[in-house]
Length: 439
Ligand SMILES: C[S@@+](CC[C@H](N)C(=O)[O-])C[C@H]1O[C@@H](n2cnc3c(N)ncnc32)[C@H](O)[C@@H]1O
Image 1 (cartoon, helix red, strand yellow):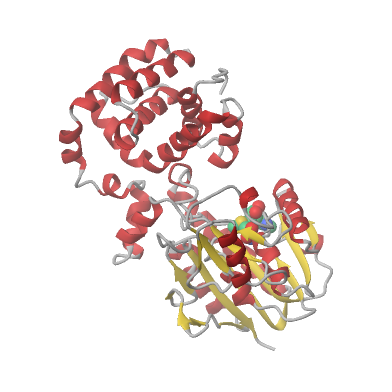
Image 2 (image 1 turned 30 degrees about the horizontal axis):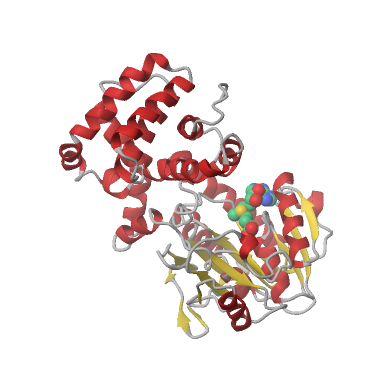
């Protein structure tokens, strides 16, 4: 991102997409910086191009490969071609405007030498649209819009659910709220939303969840600044409900940032003594901000959870929430850049890290205590396989994940734990295993 592309939406989007293609930064980090460089009125289009470009990239890369004799040497040229194809395929921008604005963006980025190539490829795509679609329609990466390795892993793990998972991953997620029950009941808050003419309904599984009819800025939500509600996906809301800390218990949130689940634990049981730990100092600042908004209190610890000698006071915890670092393959619809940033090799490395943190947390859990292992992954290698191996090797550990919540089934029971898939109008993909330590 050396060239200042200020004011040119497509050039800025190409810089963001090129960085993603090179694995340099995430949308969450790159987009806000790009947004600062365009007028307010252009931010919607910038966001659409960046999110849409990442979401459809695995398909558009196949299209581009058919249209190019060899891959472009420059990442920004590749990104401009993908963004041009995105506009032709998925937006209402007239073709001629999409093509000329994309070619102009190449000039903004001082890629004048590539304008002929970009123009030619996009015009060719426009002419041979149906023929290309026909040629590629049998390709699973094309139809699923997932990179080949991930498409294959999801299909192998969930042959019956894979098609629904791909569809959910490619759809816009709902905006879901968690009501702070310490302050307001869900029914009362739904009434407040109705009074503010905001369409909303209660979630199917979480008793504190509300789904909005459409996404809107949090500043428009009644009582948001005062902590009446927080934005949190419905599946993520199940962690505090499953862990169910009792009054006064000593509780650890071992991978806490940005603090959504820490806040929920305190809303549900305000008298607990909560330690919120995370290895990332910047992200831990977000925990402090979120706690301040809901008026919650916790000891914040910046440390590697596994290095317990460095931070643990020697008093075992009654409850531990381990929301482990993972591939985030259950939240692709919210973070489509995962399709570009994750590599297949990451999965085995993550599984090792997850096992290591789990074993370390077990040592500081009180006998008779409970640990909730959670991820927002839908890959068994990070979920049931990690937990089943741990339970098999650990004499005092047993899997006590309930198969019913409030009398209702809530996910797919596994050899260990329960898996949730992303659902178009419901929660994200999540995995939970509730483990008990023998007395
Ligand atoms: C899935 S996120 C946690 C989300 C959080 N529980 C919430 O609900 O807002 C995983 C977190 O684990 C942290 N992490 C990764 N490795 C860690 C380690 N060895 N010790 C402590 N935290 C770690 C990351 O910084 C990241 O914030």
